[in-house]
Image 1: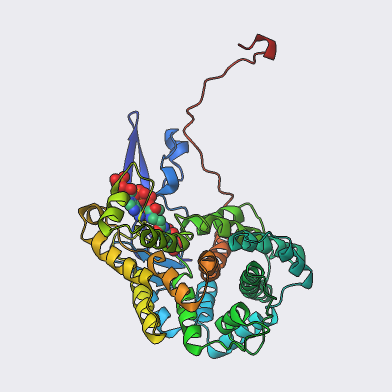
Image 2: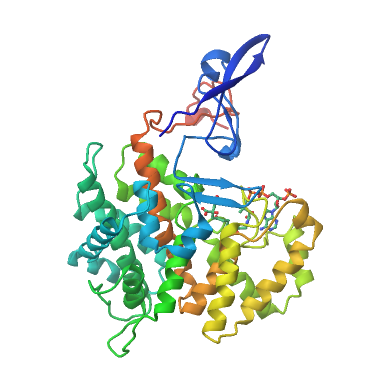
Length: 434
Ligand code: SDX
């Protein structure tokens, strides 16, 4: 990765002592003050709760411009990737840094098929989960269990080993996701087949059964590819940071991805796609008016938030939400479906975007606002929505894990704190305690 060009300087004065700070340039977007010596030179930590203003690394994978609503993966706009690529091509792009040639794509697909089966001993794990176990719990546990069956990558692993491990994980996560769904509905597992493409295989494992001659509709396969592409990566979001954090200790890739899945599960992050549909169902069930919903969202005493709205970086319409909204309409039209949830969602978006509270805070629909409604139209239950987010995000996690391991500036992450606890206190024996 290219070194950031050093350019203008900044200065910082603490207790009358002034130090110079490098201003690090990026190839696109914001610059950064290099604070890596601020403790040594001033005796003070930098304080930035939740790292809202902190760049923890240099990265060449994804660029997001939150003001302009721009999202690039290795320089390619998300709109073009969603329009022209399959998910596997975007996965290859994120992990290897370039779009695959026809031969590279064929080899990658072949590896994905070779590694699509789960070790038969892992099948029995599914049987030990109670009915109604959330598929994200199963997904995270099964992924970390892969480390008991398959070798982990080493720092000096060669490209062949990396490709094998990466395609093994990409392929097996898809199988685990489908098996967790089948387990949740009490149906027998459907095995992957070499004759299908990545998304076709997944839909087949999800919806085929011994009594249904299900064949994945090519239209649904194309929609599935677009949905997974929309989730493929998003620079240093919470779950990617979890993967990088766990990876910085030297833990294996399976353990890192399992941590990423757990971070993604939260309703403020990837879990929002399920929370959006639950919010829309609640609005319909309780007969809430749009004004009542918006008032609840604005009420600081009410924990209710407009799920699928707002974003830490996008202060404009999330470009992925734009694509998802159009795709949602196209899918409903193509399938001649009408879904009252979609009507509520679109009316709610229109009402919120007229409201000063949302406009002043630049709160727009994010990637989660419409994607759950598309999954619904494809036949997925809402408990599977965040699993589908994880399936899409996996290549991004892998790419960041690899970049972090190869980055000479990276070492074990260990932030500091401002201590606010008691001063040194002498021990008091239990008899002498009040
Ligand atoms: C994802 O980081 C990524 O890149 C994530 C992601 C990815 O691809 O990895 O894009 C995927 O996680 C998308 C976000 C999904 N989450 C949701 O849709 C949950 C609802 N959204 C909010 O919880 C919130 O918008 C967050 C968590 C997404 C962002 O929160 P921030 O950046 O911490 O913003 P904030 O909480 O400081 O909010 C600023 C103001 C506050 O009001 P004031 O204190 O200024 O009066 O905006 C308000 C908030 O109360 N606000 C909302 C709101 N989101 C923010 N008010 C009502 N409803 C909302 N949804």
